[in-house]
Length: 259
Ligand code: 3PY
Ligand code: MG
Image 1 (cartoon, helix red, strand yellow):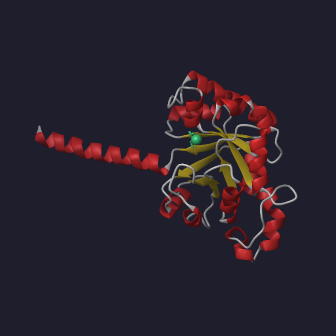
Image 2 (cartoon, protein in one colour):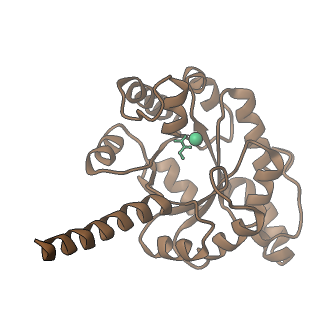
Image 3 (cartoon, helix red, strand yellow):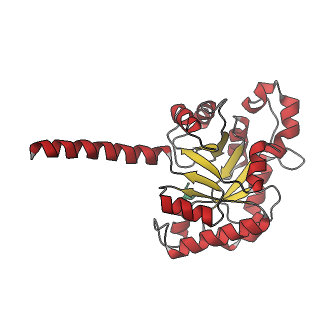
């Protein structure tokens, strides 16, 4: 088992960075910032296959676990992300045990799953084929996203699927599914989060969530609820916030000179 997977199992809080810009530079910056893991987001971004590789290269040699949030629960997307160097995949919109089994099978080599073998970046383009083939199933992390009412209702059957390392809540899709779009802090979403965290704890699996716009209070609450696999913000969120703050500062300075 990889050090990261062991840490995940142990319940140690692992803080993640989120990259939507397809930028290897962002990967370098995030990798140096002290995150435990960093993911490239291929679902809500322009990130294609060659950008996945480029962004993962930005994490090379850094003490972060490289992840990919794949565009969909599809065996080829999952295989390609792992082949190109992701140690773990975050699979969106998993609603039941059958979909969970599909995601796990895609991430694991036979006989456990259906991942195809090849000479790929993850095994040094074939140089470490044998050793990687032997350890891959133990090291590859599979995190499934719970982003709907259906997923919350089926959380026990999803968590019972062998090979699922943890659940990761997508609060925005979740809010859409519960009919309160964008209200990620509403009581119904808080309750859904608590239910998922409690189920993960019971199954001995990691509870995760994306805190898209982190605040001291939201991070504190997530940790207190038992969430351990936490993505904080995103490159685009930080750019938006910092850009607005900087422009605001300048506009206020201009205003002060006028008055
Ligand atoms: C969501 O909030 O739905 C997400 O997928 C966040 O990553
Ligand atoms: Mg989502």
